[in-house]
Length: 113
Image 1 (tube, helix red, strand yellow):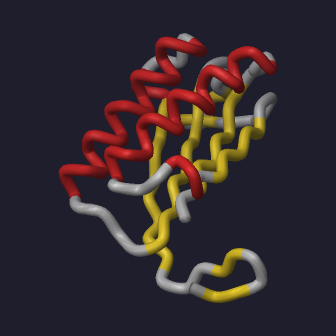
Image 2: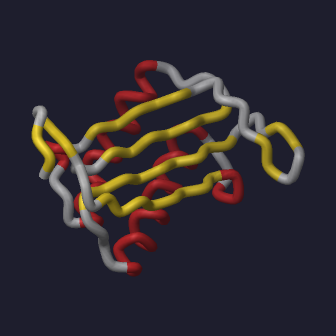
């Protein structure tokens, strides 16, 4: 039951959202989760500030998943998310923050897992 929520400084075209969605879908396997349950959200034109300065290119990515993954899997996923956003949107790695949230109580289809 993973959810990847991206807040991105700047405009992201529908074409780029589709490319990033596809690549995030492939990357979620690094956390041993299936793409078939992956939900992805994009908020572009999001005001992000780093060190008190507004970023023209930056991203905050929050990855929530049912349960937890291993530290080395989070490391691989962080590298992959950074690579994807750098390649697709030219966001510098230093301007990409990624957080992980293991969830113990998750509901879907009107039921708690």
